[in-house]
Image 1 (cartoon, one colour):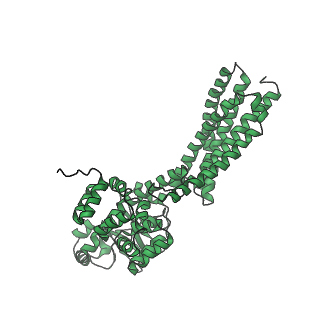
Image 2 (cartoon, rainbow, N blue to C red):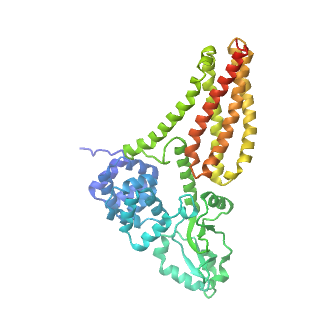
Image 3 (tube, rainbow, N blue to C red):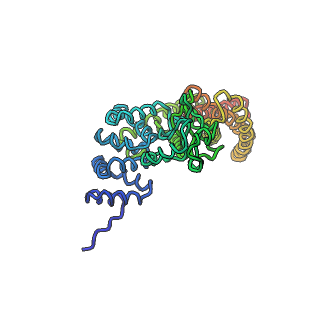
Length: 457
């Protein structure tokens, strides 16, 4: 009888688990892309996850979880027995360890920390103090540092004796500190290997190294990597003591993840990260909060129409144009929101730059609003029996509402950032509600005045 062909990765993984073949399982997982591994783990239940990770062992299990999204890895980890989870987390790189613990509930994270070696647990707690969008939040604490009076031969001997430990660090540079513990130099391994053994490190190091403070925002770190072709940059505290290393690849990954979270928040996912493998209650609550808020704001905006019921009845053509005006103006506002959030993320603007932002948005909004307002007014004029004042009402209302929309879109993110509210989460509903309210009010008010004056009879 022919052996049944296993087509899907999750089927193959479970077949290897049932065979208790750890080496074959590791080899097969290495063959899969990170995306295929992540997709496969959405198919497993908690017991199956436990079996897979137990068979792999802590070190291989740590490598596997580091390949998954933090939210997915955290979901898997929190269902493991604390002792098993602690053994896995202890094998992770310091930055991945901190990111993963930050995703867990405080109680689950503390249970894992309690099961770790005291030194490793304290290192993780130190990293958890940093905000995720700072240099400290993405740095690793595995680095090699030596005193300036040490000699080249002694450093090479130390590296050889600790080769197994340092191989996990991804060492590209070594660092030199003063007698007070402050960072004063960088050692390129090439310079180290080609220098005489009796030379002091202070004679072969690169002085005045580029560094970044642990509290520096991610945008500032990203700009440094744009400016310099370094593989990594040392991180210091305010006293100049080296506390970690931030790597280019980690910064690029963190920036990409932040953009992804911003997109989800912009789309109405409270918390900024959601996977369909999450519990149903958690997923629905993330969405329901946003939907309830938007329902309340939509009712508020629509109530403007009720106050102008007679105007709508007398000029039914307004029903056709009001959604177009609000939608197009909202699009202009959303463009302004996106640019403001992007520039805030890159550090190109600060909340105090509101006048410059507003002036730039109004100048562009006036041109776009006038051009599209003329087109929309022309449609109203030609479509409704050549009534010129209807075109003026529609075109004028659209132009003014576009100015309102781009002003709000440019300034609201700055205002929210100033009061420590996430702009990607708060700006869209505020913009939509106010733009709709102003659009309805402008169209209906202009139309009522025109009707009262007999221009639209």
